[in-house]
Amino acid sequence: MINSTQISYFTLAAYFDTGVFKYLLFTLILSLYVFIVCANLLLIVVICMNRSLHEPMYILMCSLFVNGLYGSTWLFPFLMIQIFLDSHIVSASVCFLQIFCVHSYGAVEYLNLAFMSYDRYLAICDPLHYNTRMTYNKVVMFIFLTWFYPCLGLLVLLSLVLPLQLCGNIIYKVYCDTHSVTKLACFSTSLINIYGLMITFSTIVVCLLSIMYTYMRILQVCLSGSEQTRQKAVSTCTPHLAALVNFSVGACFEIIQSRFNMSGVPNMLRIFLSLYFLTCPPLFNPVMYSLKMSKIRNICKSLISKVDTSN
Image (tube, rainbow, N blue to C red; front, side, top):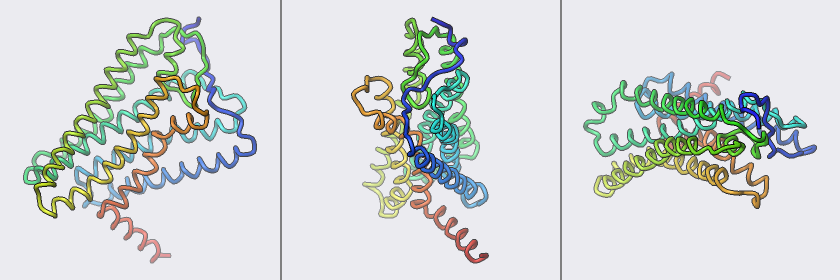
């Protein structure tokens, strides 16, 4: 029994020897990471550089792409390094940093999607008052809350996890998370579990309920509105709903895997499920929004045509 602040490392036991396939796996992960960085950075630059996109919907979208970069940047380089290591050991400081990153990424994603649904609700259900109710200052406040609230909550969570007395240092995952560390505690972690449930309820549950409410109202307006209203709703809400479902499925996988005994599930499948919500949203979000949002699609096409013309 040693205090967690005295632990110098954790062992990530989910990794296994891939043999000669490690080079193929490294190339695949590197390719995915390069695509994620390029796609998200491209859309961030496009939104920031074009005044026509300086609207609440696109500013919130830009925050979503920044979170995609944030979530993938701490994960992919770490995975690429671990592939070539014989002993998959991570220092305690890096492990706790991963805990902060993985949970803040998930909370920021849900809060961002909730504020985006509120924006669509105002634009479709109350278009006459949209500009007065969705002001620039309100968007800035939304983005501030999106990032500040999860970071503050996780700093409090880490202050509860760090003093724990642990009876082991083996984590059966490819990265560190709170539940994996607290399972190693020698004593009851009821306080941490209660606080974790409060944070989960105040982010995931509240965000999902608000999103469901806004889309019920949007559906009511679409059913009773004009064809133009329905087209506007479909064009702007489809990528948002796709992003929400994609991330929620991945988050559900991760919650189930963390809370229940998954020893009967093949290791490869467990690794895939634990990485899904960290890899797929940053990969698919820029693709979906660039294909479905006409303004972004047209600007990207014009940029590509200018590059071709210059060449």
